[in-house]
Amino acid sequence: MTGWWKAPLPAAALAATALAAAAAHLLPGTARAADPALVERGAYLAQIMDCDGCHTPGVMSGQPDFSRRLAGGTVGFRVGDLGVFWPPNLTSDPATGLGAWSAEEITAALRTGLRPDGRELAPIMPWRSYSALTEQDMAALVAYLQSLPAVEHQVPEPHAVGAAAPLPYLDVVPPG
Ligand code: HEC
Image (tube, rainbow, N blue to C red; front, side):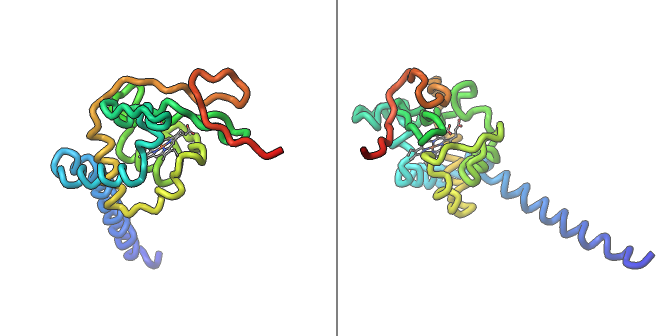
């Protein structure tokens, strides 16, 4: 058998990659506890990326409730024939927010638009733009989200177009 000696090399390379990946994944959680500067950077990013505009109650209707920051939007969006979507609760509440999501799952949603259940987020959530975040800024944003105090607030599930809506939503009406 030739080339057996090559085996340790790829294995070592894989191990190094795995270690690097593990370190990268650890970053948000570790930093959340240890690095207030990272959370502060995340708060800054969340502000200029306008997460509040959609995910904080009342912002869309001119009555922002920052005591429940990012606890879920009260105005939804109809996206073509896909459905009507309300911006979910991003606080650390485990039942109605992101409290049960890992840092990796939040990162995946922001980077690839995929929720842990495999559903792709509707394009009104600007994840395609957010996917360009650097690793460090993504870690900061996720650390900030995970630092948000838990607020219990369930937004409606996505609704089919035409179904009776429990809350208002913005619609794009074709001309004519
Ligand atoms: C233009 C409105 C809008 C903006 C701005 C916005 N979002 Fe969203 N977001 C949504 C909507 C609507 C959904 C739900 C989409 C769906 O269910 O398909 C969503 C879903 C999400 C989800 C998935 C949550 C879940 O429970 O499924 C995360 C995480 C998220 N947004 C984070 C953010 C962050 C962080 C920011 C700012 C950096 C942000 N969003 C900015 C509208 C927005």
